[in-house]
Length: 324
Ligand code: AMP
Ligand code: MN
Ligand code: MN
Image 1 (cartoon, protein in one colour):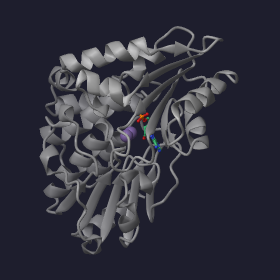
Image 2 (image 1 turned 180 degrees about the vertical axis):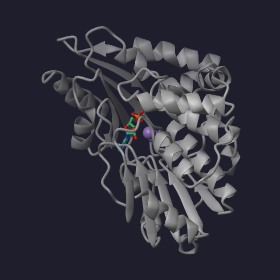
Image 3 (image 1 turned 60 degrees about the horizontal axis):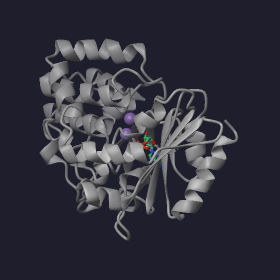
Image 4 (image 1 turned 90 degrees about the vertical axis):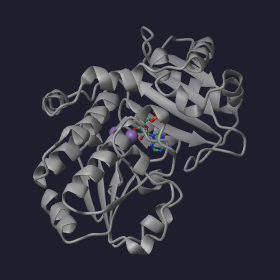
């Protein structure tokens, strides 16, 4: 697998690197680390993400180089798709990217569809950044401080700061090496977690206020409407992480957060008016639930998009509590 990827890279110059819409720390960290590593090999890659990079990740090196426009897909010989369970996760450009001669799929989602010509899918990895760490070592690029910072951010955020069930020994082993390579954990944490705007705290207040618990006490639901975002002067990306409050409640097995997009303006790549995030305490598989709603993800963190109306959506979510 690794050999196939390396030989393809060695024989190619026009590489597209892409990740999913609404990128998280792993998507961005993996994308940037891979871009920086390829540059060391004198391979010029285009870095693509259809959504804007959330401001909190703009401290990462090369984050300004990520393009939102694909351009002519015919110029690429190889596409490397990072942190995507399915190709459609990169957004509407998937239809063009699909035509690139060789697609390399590098991912850790349990719902991965093996859409690539070459698939490096390792579901035991805590983050795609873990796989990228192995790959960069294999291709013989030294992990310098900028690359280390990107990979560290990917592992830190996807493991929920080394707290989620995907936190494996590799997370610690690799991060130890990344810290040795020059990452300052405090500095990264400060950027990623320590820069809440007042508006975001006000939104959190509304999120907590929206909490509903199922009758059996096993399901929690938060709902954030577009109106709430408008009232507080926040954006959908500010919601990131708020589901953890719903997840942390004692006895909760399934935490759900519904976020509404502006009518007629879902972010590029999102397929409906609402995005639903699902988190489990580890005792149930939320990837399966997400798939049944047309989404995907991991055992303990998954999501889907829907057009269905809010009352109906809430009803179908509370129905899930009966099986818990
Ligand atoms: P989120 O709920 O956006 O925090 O996402 C949680 C996990 O579910 C991430 O690993 C996503 O990659 C995955 N996920 C979220 N939304 C979708 C979707 N519409 N389709 C497939 N996977 C998704
Ligand atoms: Mn991701
Ligand atoms: Mn990931």
